Image 1: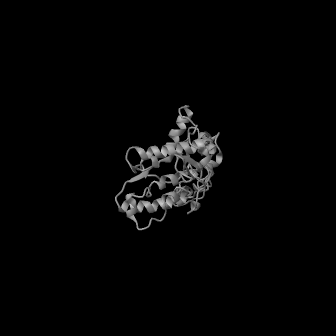
Image 2 (image 1 turned 60 degrees about the horizontal axis):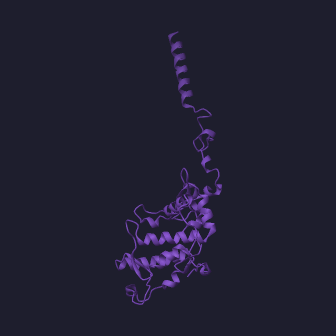
Image 3 (image 1 turned 180 degrees about the horizontal axis):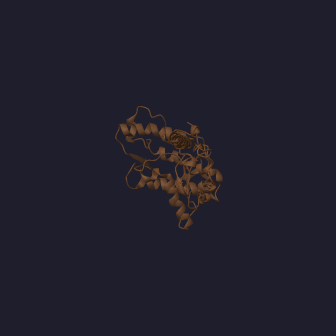
Length: 262
């Protein structure tokens, strides 16, 4: 009788162990195939009132090696992606503007042009036997061509330990910790871009109070004018507070340039 009772106890114990080790139907679901409950889905209701495609996911394998994708934006943020109309706020975007009587197809062209020799006695002529481009040529490049020309100039600037550019004959420090003249030039160029291009103004205003994120990485240590997204938010705030004139004083009859690809 003792043996029978012991056998019964062992059998019951074995059954308990087996039941404990056998996953149930629900428990067998992995995080990957378990449906997300409605309450677990992120609350993106704050995106209401904005174009939904601003956050449309892009497959990672399709991203450029420098690119921050639309879906990488956080709460109340939007990436200034070149994949949609927000890309018009990029320095690379072709939204021509006249600045100090000269037409520039892109802000990037204006930016990179300042790295090139300006006058006949400019000391930068001695940096290379033959510069790849002239200052005037770079001023008319599209964004990518201007960036490439700027990289060539960067090499010569580094080689000659030069942290300066010129504008209208004046030598200007290039990369400074605190905003100085170069920052002011870029700021003023952005103002003319938005004053002379209604679609740029419309796009910026449409972002309302969203935090603007660049579509590429920018070092926190970079000068403020490198952070074009921050400048646009500053400009947006001035417009919202009616503290910025949107009237240009430039001669718009000169606004005829198109970005050249070298």
